[in-house]
Image 1: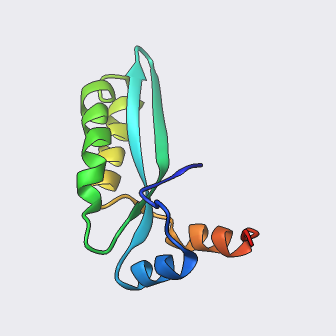
Image 2 (image 1 turned 90 degrees about the vertical axis):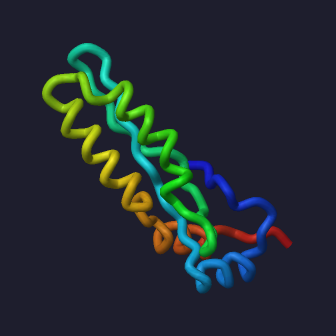
Amino acid sequence: MKIQGLGDITFDQLQLEINRGGKFVIFEYCVSILILTFKQPTDIYFIRGDQSAVGRSLGYSLVSLVAGWWGFPWGPIYTISSLVTNLGGGKDVTSEVLKALRSAPRPA
């Protein structure tokens, strides 16, 4: 999975940003096609401490509102679930990402 919003940041700078309230989050979106409904996660987004995660989630929430609700029976259920997750700031996966980053080999 790709991490959006990270840029060219060192691990030490990343730790400083996380100490300031930064976090890694995943948003969700829902799309329905007739009787099939799909609920999908997005890429991982790095949200700095001074940024709002809700602003990043608006596009995915709009997709769910337009294309997700009309599949029966899971469309409304998944759409509401996606909206709750997105408008709540996304699913926080900071600890998992940091664990993976710590165990990854660093370039010299």
